[in-house]
Length: 133
Image: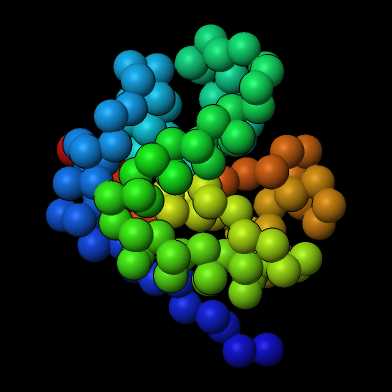
Protein backbone atom coordinates (compact mmCIF):
# COMPACT_ATOMS: atom_id res chain seq x y z
CA UNK A 1 0.00 0.00 0.00
CA UNK A 2 1.40 3.37 -1.07
CA UNK A 3 1.78 5.99 1.66
CA UNK A 4 -0.11 9.20 0.90
CA UNK A 5 2.01 12.16 2.00
CA UNK A 6 0.41 14.84 4.14
CA UNK A 7 0.48 18.43 2.85
CA UNK A 8 2.95 20.14 5.18
CA UNK A 9 1.51 23.35 6.60
CA UNK A 10 3.61 26.47 5.86
CA UNK A 11 4.15 27.79 9.39
CA UNK A 12 4.20 31.50 8.50
CA UNK A 13 1.00 31.13 6.49
CA UNK A 14 -0.62 29.22 9.37
CA UNK A 15 0.40 31.84 11.96
CA UNK A 16 -0.97 34.60 9.71
CA UNK A 17 -4.25 32.71 9.20
CA UNK A 18 -4.47 32.03 12.94
CA UNK A 19 -4.12 35.74 13.71
CA UNK A 20 -6.82 36.61 11.14
CA UNK A 21 -9.28 33.91 12.23
CA UNK A 22 -10.78 36.00 15.04
CA UNK A 23 -10.92 33.11 17.46
CA UNK A 24 -12.64 33.52 20.80
CA UNK A 25 -10.52 33.38 23.93
CA UNK A 26 -11.57 29.78 24.61
CA UNK A 27 -10.86 28.75 21.00
CA UNK A 28 -7.43 30.38 21.19
CA UNK A 29 -6.75 28.59 24.48
CA UNK A 30 -7.71 25.24 22.92
CA UNK A 31 -5.34 25.71 19.96
CA UNK A 32 -2.49 26.88 22.20
CA UNK A 33 -2.99 23.90 24.52
CA UNK A 34 -3.08 21.40 21.65
CA UNK A 35 0.01 22.90 20.04
CA UNK A 36 1.88 22.84 23.35
CA UNK A 37 0.97 19.31 24.48
CA UNK A 38 1.37 17.70 21.06
CA UNK A 39 -0.75 14.62 21.79
CA UNK A 40 -4.26 14.46 23.21
CA UNK A 41 -7.61 12.73 23.40
CA UNK A 42 -11.05 14.26 23.61
CA UNK A 43 -11.39 13.30 27.33
CA UNK A 44 -7.95 14.76 28.12
CA UNK A 45 -8.92 18.10 26.53
CA UNK A 46 -12.23 18.23 28.43
CA UNK A 47 -10.46 17.47 31.72
CA UNK A 48 -7.39 19.68 31.31
CA UNK A 49 -9.25 22.70 29.91
CA UNK A 50 -12.35 22.17 32.08
CA UNK A 51 -14.63 22.13 29.04
CA UNK A 52 -18.22 21.00 28.80
CA UNK A 53 -18.67 17.65 27.13
CA UNK A 54 -21.28 19.17 24.78
CA UNK A 55 -20.65 20.21 22.11
CA UNK A 56 -17.86 17.67 21.60
CA UNK A 57 -14.47 19.35 21.70
CA UNK A 58 -13.48 17.66 18.42
CA UNK A 59 -16.41 19.42 16.74
CA UNK A 60 -15.18 22.70 18.18
CA UNK A 61 -11.71 21.91 16.85
CA UNK A 62 -13.17 21.43 13.36
CA UNK A 63 -14.93 24.80 13.56
CA UNK A 64 -11.67 26.44 14.59
CA UNK A 65 -9.86 24.77 11.69
CA UNK A 66 -12.49 26.07 9.27
CA UNK A 67 -11.97 29.60 10.63
CA UNK A 68 -8.21 29.29 10.18
CA UNK A 69 -8.60 27.50 6.84
CA UNK A 70 -10.68 30.37 5.46
CA UNK A 71 -7.47 32.44 5.54
CA UNK A 72 -5.35 29.79 3.84
CA UNK A 73 -7.92 28.26 1.47
CA UNK A 74 -5.59 26.54 -1.01
CA UNK A 75 -3.68 24.69 1.69
CA UNK A 76 -6.84 23.89 3.63
CA UNK A 77 -8.39 22.32 0.53
CA UNK A 78 -5.25 20.20 0.02
CA UNK A 79 -5.49 19.03 3.63
CA UNK A 80 -9.18 18.21 3.21
CA UNK A 81 -8.45 16.12 0.12
CA UNK A 82 -5.61 14.34 1.89
CA UNK A 83 -7.89 13.68 4.86
CA UNK A 84 -10.46 12.08 2.60
CA UNK A 85 -7.83 9.93 0.89
CA UNK A 86 -6.45 8.53 4.15
CA UNK A 87 -9.85 7.99 5.75
CA UNK A 88 -10.98 4.40 6.08
CA UNK A 89 -14.48 5.54 5.09
CA UNK A 90 -13.51 8.18 2.49
CA UNK A 91 -14.64 11.15 4.57
CA UNK A 92 -12.65 14.24 5.41
CA UNK A 93 -12.08 15.59 8.90
CA UNK A 94 -11.36 19.33 9.03
CA UNK A 95 -9.35 18.91 12.25
CA UNK A 96 -6.61 17.42 10.05
CA UNK A 97 -5.44 20.99 9.45
CA UNK A 98 -3.81 20.85 12.89
CA UNK A 99 -3.61 17.20 13.92
CA UNK A 100 -4.22 13.60 12.91
CA UNK A 101 -4.77 10.26 14.56
CA UNK A 102 -1.61 9.13 16.28
CA UNK A 103 -0.20 5.78 15.17
CA UNK A 104 1.43 3.02 17.16
CA UNK A 105 4.78 1.43 16.27
CA UNK A 106 3.05 -0.86 13.76
CA UNK A 107 1.47 2.09 11.95
CA UNK A 108 -2.01 1.39 13.29
CA UNK A 109 -4.19 4.28 14.52
CA UNK A 110 -4.50 4.64 18.29
CA UNK A 111 -8.26 4.18 18.36
CA UNK A 112 -10.83 1.98 20.07
CA UNK A 113 -11.83 0.59 16.65
CA UNK A 114 -8.27 -0.59 16.06
CA UNK A 115 -8.07 -2.10 19.54
CA UNK A 116 -5.01 0.01 20.30
CA UNK A 117 -6.31 2.67 22.73
CA UNK A 118 -9.42 3.38 24.82
CA UNK A 119 -9.94 6.76 23.06
CA UNK A 120 -9.02 8.25 19.69
CA UNK A 121 -5.56 9.70 20.22
CA UNK A 122 -4.39 12.67 18.15
CA UNK A 123 -0.98 14.18 17.46
CA UNK A 124 -0.30 17.73 16.36
CA UNK A 125 1.50 18.05 13.05
CA UNK A 126 5.22 18.43 13.66
CA UNK A 127 5.52 21.89 12.12
CA UNK A 128 2.74 23.24 14.38
CA UNK A 129 4.03 21.75 17.65
CA UNK A 130 5.20 24.42 20.12
CA UNK A 131 6.08 22.34 23.17
CA UNK A 132 9.73 23.28 23.01
CA UNK A 133 9.26 27.05 22.79
